[in-house]
Structures are given as structure tokens and as C-alpha cells.
Image 1 (spheres, rainbow, N blue to C red):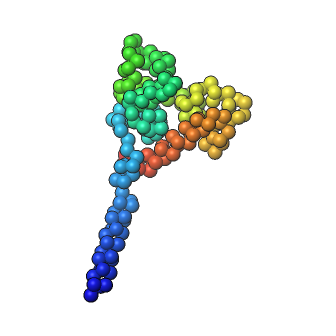
Image 2: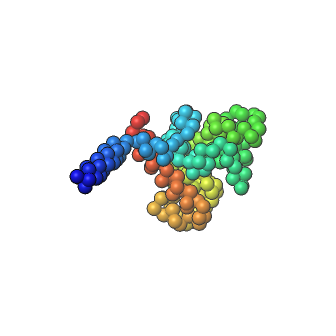
Image 3: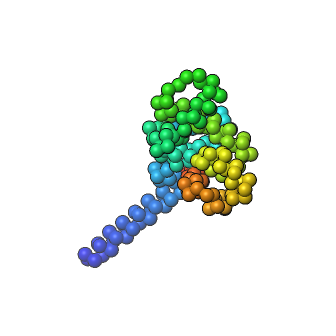
Length: 190
């Protein structure tokens, strides 16, 4: 009798686990929990204004700052999109911001606005090659141009290992990984 009850409980527990797995397997609930996108309103607004894929912008923010608006790198990059102050000055001046304070780069809206405008510039500069844009966002457009002209890198994900900067290789691959995750989890809904 005890053996039968134990077996019955075991089947109940196993059945319950199977039902839970089936319910959440095709659900985006777990994916959103593991890979959240913060600041969606600002990301979508400024991505649309600049003709960018919002999930790519979210992936860049994820890799750059993990959605921490107060992030600051050792090199001085600031905010969600880790903008260098000189780059932010140049972009914001083009956008008509005559004055702003360095600490304003910690403002998510301003940071995403400037970062997406800079990404738009890079997409134009690199003829919409996503991987060249990502490499340039991390290592600078001059380096990417030099690598392409000298045949070091062909601008593809397949040859990302040929990029001479280890950080940039990892950066391009990481952003691509999160971009694909966000597309898989969120893009179906839009």
C-alpha cells in the first residue's frame, strides 16, 4: 500500500513537472525573465527616428552597460550606450544641443538619443554592414576602415576572429548573440 502511494505521488510530481515545462517551453515568459529589455520606450522611439532595428540597439545596450545608466568605463565612456564624451559632444552638437553637462549622459533618454544617432551615422558610413558598424562602435571607424582596406578583416561575422582587437572580436559576437536572442523572444510580438 505504501509503495503504491509513493509511486502515485511520484507520477503526480513528474506529471506536474511535464505540464509546467510544456506550458513554458513555447512561452516567452521565461525568455523575457532571463533577457529583459529595459528602457523599451526610449529604445524604440530613437531607433525608429534613426532607421535602426530596436533589438540591435537593445543588444548594444545590454553588452555596453547591462542597462545601467550610471555605467562608466575605465576609458571614460558613459551611460547606457557607453558614449565617449567627445563622440557625444559631436553628435549632440549636430542634433542642436548647444549645451549639456557631462552628467547628462547618464540620462537614459539623452544617451539613447545620442547613441542611436551615432549608430545611424555608422550605418551610413559602412553601407549598412551591421558587423562593421558594431566593430566601429567598439574600436572606432578608423580602425575598421584600416582593417578592411588592408584585408585583415572582410567585415563578416564568419571572419570576426581576424579582427586584431580581442575586445572587439568578443564585442561583435556578444552583440550578435543578444540581438538574435531579442529577435527570438520579442520580435514575434511586434
